[in-house]
Length: 84
Image (cartoon, rainbow, N blue to C red; front, side):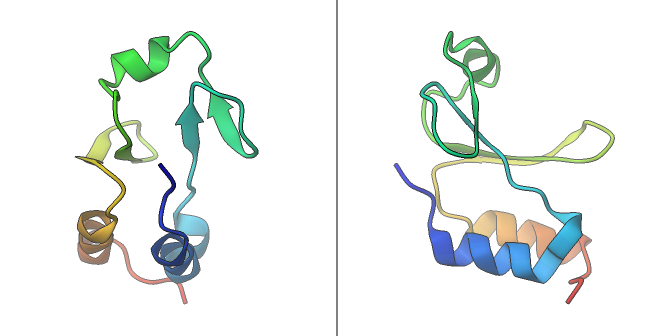
């Protein structure tokens, strides 16, 4: 399942250096962090696509299942000023 490109690009544009996006996957893919054993995904209980917002202090500030980014966009809008 692919992440929607337009909302993801809009968030990257809006928050600039305040937001880094990473992908964790079992299979090797361009730009993805690879977890071939599945241990990291199992610890995250990520048997389906998931979203995690990890703050710089390591706290998980937001998590949600699926690829719909509206909830994440709303959460970011409440806590982060747009950088552009």
